[in-house]
Image (tube, rainbow, N blue to C red; front, top):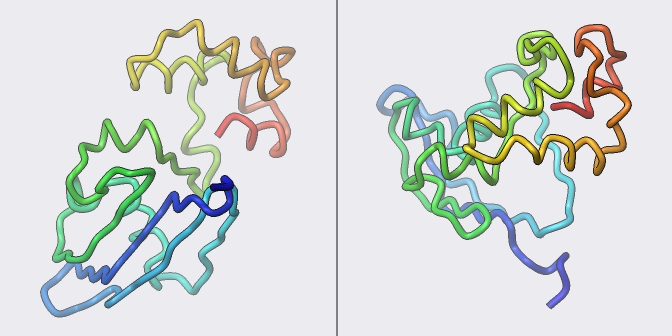
Length: 153
């Protein structure tokens, strides 16, 4: 089977409301294959961030509401898997870049994520090599251009 035919995300019959009977969405169904890039667009309040929180496992683990359906991400049941386990598979990049970068160097920023996932910090160098940003290791993230900052997120 080719990588593009492998389902990485499968959502079936997903319903969610923060308050009883005030549905953010109902009966959402979709699949996303590995290697496919998807964007969710909509007006403010349409449920984009809520869906991201569900895919990441923040809902229902940390953020409460009324939820039903099936959400599988890389073989993990997002509604039942711990946030820590989901964080190994799913990440989020927030709209306000300044709110998510707070370390003194690029290397420290990458090591912060590795530390939280209990991954050997020596992997920071490997990650920077893969992203071709090793030359930025000792730069201050807030001094980089927006394009350079996006590589860190």
